Length: 197
Image (cartoon, rainbow, N blue to C red; front, side, top):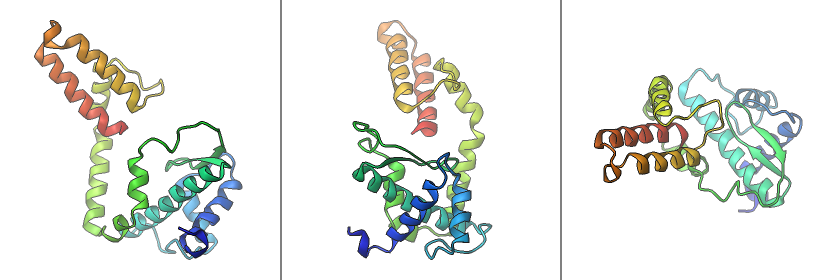
């Protein structure tokens, strides 16, 4: 798509300007407030207390961030780290596989149907699901304990899957392990996939 004909490209440009001015990174909330102060026509200038307004504002910003990340990657100018707590421009590194891996969040935020088709009840369900996952911290800690993994060390799904395969191999009934232990390992993997996928 040609950015000259795309009104959302203007939001990408505004976000880029703000990120260039904050080399240490900026939180999502701060970025939204800065865009509102600039009277960005792409971000609703409404209180974020309404859940649907909050969702739509978040969605529009993250749509722009993922579009900007791809543009910067293609230009070879920067890598864009996207997280609600820290959105930051990083130096471009050739050979990095940052965009080659499938990214479910990217796919979600770049599909504008997700914005159009989400109503207030959907937002309520999304928030309930989020809080359920957050409160499931004990479940997550138990699964990490079973896998003998420490959250202090960097954890990602690839490392968790590697450990899962080791445990399945070690505890498989065909190799003298127990079915119950294998079921516990499988259940722990399901839990960890929810947190790290």
